[in-house]
Image (cartoon, rainbow, N blue to C red; front, top):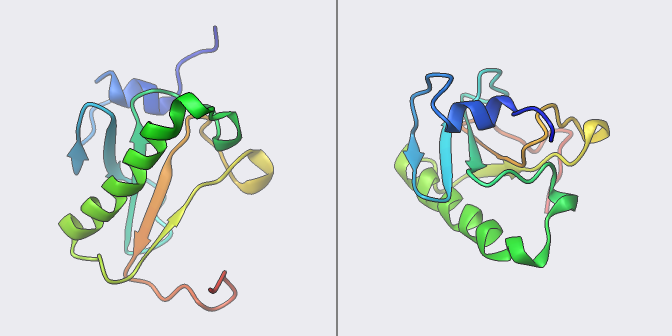
Length: 116
């Protein structure tokens, strides 16, 4: 068994964190290295190392995360313009191998980024 990730430890209450949102399936808290004025992480309680490791059994959870992203954006007052990012693997910038969504806002992302 692999050692717990920092996110598993936050979820277990071993590392004190102020949750912006939490329910039985996920938690949300501020990113400690923000890339935008509003930058929070949405983390499932059930650890999936990376998105490519998700299975059909995880479909409901993955859908829940997407729906909650909209809810959290509304809580933060950024529902009209935000970006969601999921990094998959070290080569894509993933540093914590516990699937999580980055919700970022209050920054213009079009320069040099993905558009569409």
